[in-house]
Length: 200
Length: 200
Image (cartoon, rainbow over all chains, first blue to last red; front, side, top):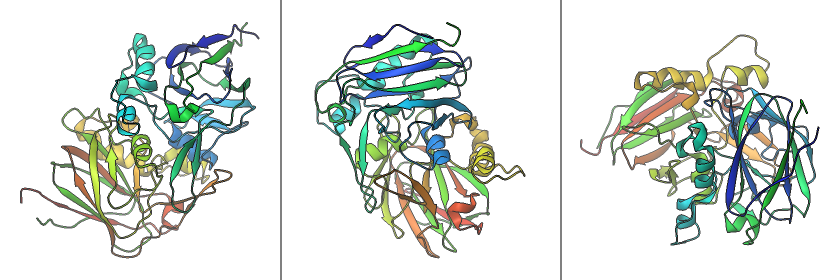
């Protein structure tokens, strides 16, 4: 199994299909860059990757090697085979035009991961209301266990860190190089990925 | 403004509409009982109460008095006007048939909050795939800030504790008396609620 490494330009998104057994490798080429990942079960695209199910079944907010990512119908969508970073978020929705306005006070509209995912997934008939909470690869969200206060910190990923996920059903995947300053230490960088096909 | 208190029987759900300015009071009549709350913007019912947006904008996992609950489109859906308990969850999906099988090892199928919500919302044309992560009123989920390990603890609510929410747009609401043993200390109890109409 091998695949060509593809680059997601800063502040953009890509969408692609996976078959069961395919392995998706998400790489942070420069370090401290988040990639939002969403997934839908083909062919219906109604069943989607669910943070709430995955966290509940793992009994852990932060998932890593050996953990399974579940759909809203409690079906296994991915297994995390390898993770050289070890810290990702699964609680926050993709950044959006409104995020930048509400949290950052930005006045210039940018589509954010939500808009970029919606555009990338549009050829499959999905719109922005279908974008759920993402598996935010390399995103570092710290939690105060007493107050519940969260803070978005610079990612712990260093250049070359990767996460390898095995697809467990036919999937449509959306993947971004995140546009939110807090989540990449205000240095907007690319994300690399490759798909290693089970039948290659 | 006043309203008749209605009882949600143990392990069941109700659905009802709110107009802007209406106040919903959710009461734990016996103590240590969770109520899963989901909401959709009328009339379209495509826009829904979003944990990921609400947590992001509050920068806190656990929301209470003064906090605003946002939709996936970043529109304010509810304001929490009063909260005598102070601890609720907003990270986990409603319990379901699969939850009971995967987490509890139950062999007898029970619909759980997810199935109960889907049944209650069916007259408005919503099905089970439209049930997102709920605002889990009175649910006590503890987090280990170092490992991310979560544990579902008995609620901190005592008999008579309540949360008062003001609707900020026309809403369809689903509300349960939760069916998951962990979240009510394995004593399945009712939930009370009343709607105080803005125009009454």
